[in-house]
Length: 189
Image (spheres, rainbow, N blue to C red):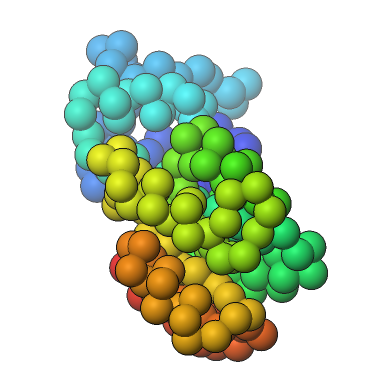
């Protein structure tokens, strides 16, 4: 909604901050908010200057104005499953920042760099399987809060074992779209 590239008008900033346009003009006049003038004499504020202003004056509305995308890491060695899951996530109302890992080893590296909120984790994979990935993530203080939605083509034994390893939920393959999306939403809420 606020992802436009153009600089903000004083009216837009006033609306975001729930103040009058005159208050915004005072912030500019006193040097609190950096701005520039258009050829027509109107003030404009770049996104960077506005974000800096919000941080400097501890106005806690950055998330409201510039919402961060929720980060999801898909871990599966089957490309068609990865594409299906990506499509399912992209068709949801929320917009997600999505990364992909093809095996457990790559997943653990990406967890450290990408810091996902949710892992969609296949259980049977090369290098390090989903059971071990789950144990390591849930066993580490810095990553234990990451939600894990496991997926498996195998039976109840795998499902029980992955839940014992700490997964928050497990779905059977083939993944049903509505069931998958409902569980993603539930785990992120």
